[in-house]
Image 1: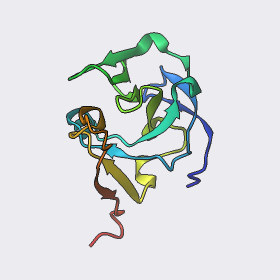
Image 2: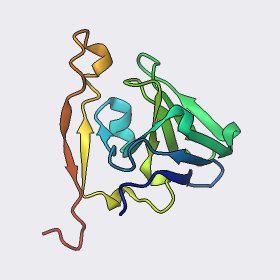
Image 3: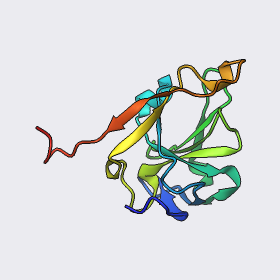
Length: 146
């Protein structure tokens, strides 16, 4: 897997939402989050500047979900239900993009994925200490697991 990819296309499961994105630092920014919403959806997200994600088709199919402070904006396809991207609470100028929606990329391509502490969010820390790394998720393919 080439982690240095820049521009890539993506889509939701049904193909109704299609987009083009230039990633901030390729797949090197891949991470998971421990907040209640991310924990339940289980996605791996990579970073892109907001200006670098372009919806090519299906803008009208995107549904917005907000919770808690309402700062983060989570978008998903209203037809198939797949989360495609979200505007970050920690950096409103960035999107987190679901790697599973990127053409030719699978979340199972990643051997390790850093996990950010979304429960203790940096925006909630008046001292500005920033996010803690909660750990690393390791994927062990089933044919090599014991």
